[in-house]
Image (tube, rainbow, N blue to C red; front, top):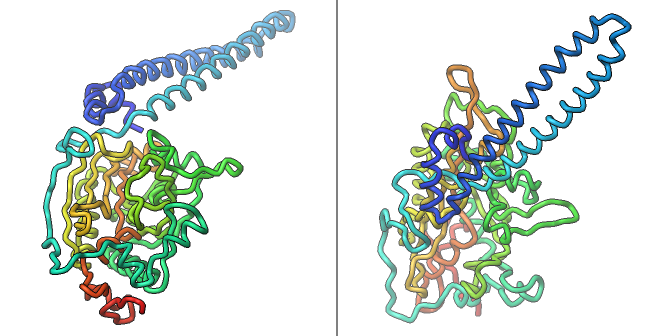
Length: 421
């Protein structure tokens, strides 16, 4: 949720943000009107309630022969108060409905435009070259007996896979390497629930334009999470945090589920875009003044992982129209995938400023003693998709794959992944 005070005092900032996102600008005026209606309704209720309190004292002091008439008036006034309270409650709900549909305020410097209008911040490493025809990750995975899409489809349908043998070990190795880096960085590990309540899913901003991507269990009124960011954001809902000694940082390990409803026919080969995968997610609760610095810190952790895995990658500043509703700025880290002759997103990190914290009522106490919303940030440190770039980048002519040195301790010292004969 955006700051209601900003809505009243500087709505043009919100209009501009909605415009560069390609989101409805007229929603700002609807929100202003809903805010005015809400405050009017609350004021009317409070005025009537004050009258009721005063009148109650009058009735209590009135002579016995006058009380009967006064009690009747008191009952009428009570009915008016009840009606005014209902109107105030309804106005409050309508205000939150409209304001909740406004997306987070885009930070200065974020490029305008859509998916293709990003700005490349940096490119790191050299693109791999081969003196043979490189195989794609699925062909390599099948040679290594590491990825089984056929049986994944047999058991669960399209876009499901079994990671088998060295494939399973490889994913766990990447995840554990990420977890060790997170522990060194002061992150508290959490294995998070993958089913969450609607108010938590909504609070993180995931029930907006892309809600069709989320699996929902109507019999239980629960959502399957597509990232542990959701559970990590909800972990401190309705709490006042102590961040006087610095940010609170978590690393959430979970299985993730995405319907990928809007990506029909895209990346259907292999494990680039699947319905189920594992992910290690960094999540920070920080003072809003420190959010930009924390964003750079999360990015540095991601880059450190990709550099250790020997991957060529670029960092892009995502354009406003390609941001999720909660993100005020997002950096994508994309690795080079040789057989696609293109960069593909492996990970991202988002600064959500106070947007999620306002929706979930997560605050901290300032030096003055007042409470104010914290800022929340997230970033993926390891996930199943990384196997794609790793296999293709480090492949050899015979179908074997070199193991990056930093990953070898997590595979029992293994240096080469050999094809099965």
